[in-house]
Length: 132
Image (cartoon, rainbow, N blue to C red; front, top):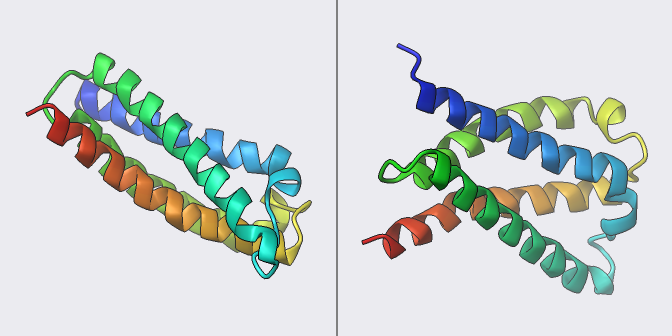
């Protein structure tokens, strides 16, 4: 049976994925640095810090809409699964979605994405620990 809370979780999962993807479609060429350059680390860390802040805000909003215990953990788990599945398709069709990115920028996006999914899974665990 499809519950309203599961629907909300799936909606947020898709919106998080869509927001991140659209950000890189429109701004990727400006924020993604060639990972083979010495200057890669600082922009990467700043981008991941901004990602962590945005994800934290998303989790806070989600917990207000779904106050059940471990709601954020549920969103992190389901959102990561949904996002990774969709991103596999997006990366497979990178010329359609990321036509403005160089090969190096696409690699930088993939590195950002892997780290961001780690954040998507870990941030709600820290939030759940803080609720006890």
